[in-house]
Image (cartoon, rainbow, N blue to C red):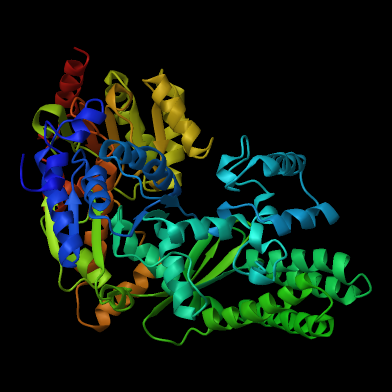
Length: 640
């Protein structure tokens, strides 16, 4: 046995081999576990890129459990959070005979709010038949649950109309003033997290907590000795959302709805409250319409300079002022009205902050969906704010992902996160890409901006897709191309063709895996966090290098900032981000030591432009070809 108890866990005689079926010690996994152990003791931040198949989850979990420290584990999504807590953590706890308490903590929108559910017993707003059926599901679930987690409610739609009515948000939570505070599911979940040794959260909650602490209003997540941030490539973008400010017309409409509800219960004699709510709703909808009918996003400054937008914003402000005067007269009539007044004051201040567009160092932008508009004030860099967290004494920070480096450099990620003094470690995947895979950039591709490009690509790949023994992902950089590709494949390919958006993500993946030969056509949400192993996925097509759209408001603001400082915005901002995104998409293909498959990238900039080498140098070492015929020959060998 070695002198290092953490390394001993991963040996052929160690507890992991004994307790986990099929577990094999891996050199890269042991190297990462040793680095994590060192970081937990020295408090020097550690940044690790662990290639697919390294086993990074166990490589950081085992040292964490062995250390006895209080640790926050944060990952990129609720699905990954659930997997970590319900699958990986219990497996290791059993193998290591670990008996300290652990906790799962989600954001408040994941828990039933007893107060708001009870309000619906007095007055149910207009709901669709589906919404009413979902409300009954929540009511039946309520007496049976200990956690109050809405994700546990059988048959409840992911985007059900009833969710905002039965959960709380920062605006409408009554806090300690609530009559159900002692029984509140969120309060209980937070109390459990405060007592736990290991707490599993997601990045959105992690940064929401940091933002709440900045305001001085308590905390959501307990202090810890160590923070481990998995899927760390997502951090700069998510941090920007929380270190900035946002406001959506959805918040104004929810306030209007809640004011009408409160008036019916607490102030039946004050019809002016409902009139004020109607005005807010009407002017919020009018403001949305001044931005056009289609979904869009862009810089806010030029839009606010337009007369019709400016006037609509003034009318919304006037309606908020009228509601303020009316609600002032209702203060003391009831908890819901008092809380509605506080929300109104907060929303007015937020609206002023996100539309006062003169401040430097921020991107001011808007985003329109079919029904709503949101305004955002996002910092161009989170490095300064995050470096203040890194400066805390006696705290360890570990950042890891399968995609953090550009080539062999971590400079882009470290600069984004304010990591000046850190240890970096790059661990290659243990998979044999030379034998297991091929990369093809086909010749004679249509230009990246060609009309009907999706149709042309799909037609040119029909033969190849028909030869794939298993399933294929066709990953697109736009919905337009996705729909064109899907149309052709459904017309001409004798296979099941699944399309993102036609069902929820989990069910689509289940269908895809069960079919075994299907083609799934999708956009960005299937580029990462998807784990399909074996023959079910043997081909990944990527339609275009994933550069952010040139009209992306945050990108254009960062490029403008680079220009002012005399820096090359393409090399500093666009290229590194696109390389990391491409690495994520490529990572869907080979997920296991026995997997085999082909990667097709239909963008000849990869071979015709100087920066193509930067992309290729960051990808696994797959044998490359430009001939679809050669690729088809390789596919025929996969049948054997």
